[in-house]
Image (cartoon, rainbow, N blue to C red; front, side, top):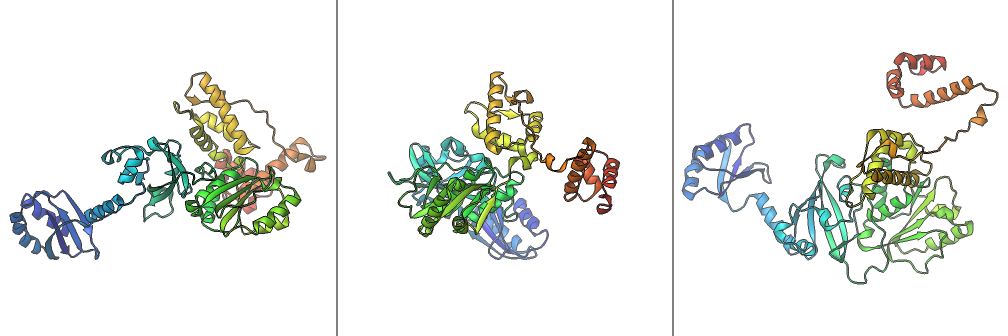
Length: 474
C-alpha cells in the first residue's frame, strides 16, 4: 500500500509521521518528498493492511501541520519509471543509459536484441563489451566528446550512435557534474553509407588544450565555416573530425574528408554534413582561388571545416570564407605540466588488448622536459618506441631507461642580440627576460620563488639586480 500525506513544511514533521508508522509496527520500505507543490510526503508500505491504514489515519491527521492523508496507486517516481519503461518498450531503436564507469544502467528491449542478450541481463554489463572500439572511458570523462552520428558496429550491424551526457543540475557544465550518458542507436540501412565516415575520437582536453576543446564544443553547433590552425602534429585533423561529431549535422549528414593537394576536388558535394578540407596551405595560390570559388556554391546544409599550419598564409579569397570562426591549437611544449597525462592517454589509446602499460613519475617528468617540435606526431612515435623497449624487458611500467635518447637542441636567436657580450652578460639577459615574463604570472616574490624552486631572498636579489623589484614590492 502507498500513502500520500499533504502537510506543511516544518522541522521535525517527517520524524513524527514515521514514528507513528513505527508505533503500529508498519514497515516503510521507500519514500519520496516533494510533489508538484512541494508539500507532499509519499511512503510505500507493501505489507500494510487496510485495517492498519484505518488505524493510523487519525493519528496522522492529528500531527500538527498534516492536512490530508490518502491512499494512492503509485508514488510519483514509480509512475515516472513505469511510464518511461512503457514508452521505451514501444521505441523501435535501441536506447540505453550508462553510468560514469561505463556500466549499463537501463536499456529497452530493442537494445537487448541488438546486443544479443536477455533484457534482464543488460543492466550492470560493461558497454565496452558490446562496443569494443568505442572510447568509452574518454566519452564518460568530459563534455567535449563526439555526440552525434558516430558510426558503430554491433554484432555485424551498422548503427549511427548519439551520445547525450547526463549532468547534475546544480553543477552545469562542470566535469564533476557528469553522472553518465544516454545512448540512442539508429540502424543504418544496407548501402546507406556511400561515404566512409572517419573514426570518431575523444579529445584530450588537458591544460591549455582545454580552452580549445571548449571553443570547439561551442562552435561545432554553429553553421559558419570553421578554420583550425596550429603547428604540425598539434591535432588539427583530430579537431576537424571532432567538429563533425559534435555537430547536429552528423545525426543526418555525412562527413567528407579531403586532403588538399592530393588529387582533384569531387565534381559533386554531399547535400548535408561536414566537408573537412585538411591542410589548406598545401594548395597553390591558384588552387586556393579555385577552391574559394567552389566553396561559395556549397549546399546550405554542408559546412566546411578547414585546417592550416600556423604561420602559413592563405589566399585572401579563401581566408575571407574562413574569417568568422577560428581555433588555434597550443603546441605540446607549452603544456609541459600535462605531458605525463597526454602520455598515459596515448598509451591507453594504443595499448594492445592483452596489456595495460603504465608510466612512472620519473619518465613522465623527463617527457615533460622535451620540446617536441613535431608535437603529438613525434611524441607518439617516441612513446611507442619506449613501449616496445618496456615489452622486451617484460616490464609493465615505462621507466626512464625505456625512453629513447633524444639529440635535440633548443633553437635560440642568440646571435641577433649577443654580439660583443660576454658569457655572463648573455646569461644575465636571458635571466632578466625570464624574470620579466614570469612576473606577469606571479605577482609576489614568494610565489615566484616557489615556481623557480629557489629562496625568496635569492629572487628578491635578482629582481633588484635587474631593476624589477619596484614593480613587485610584495
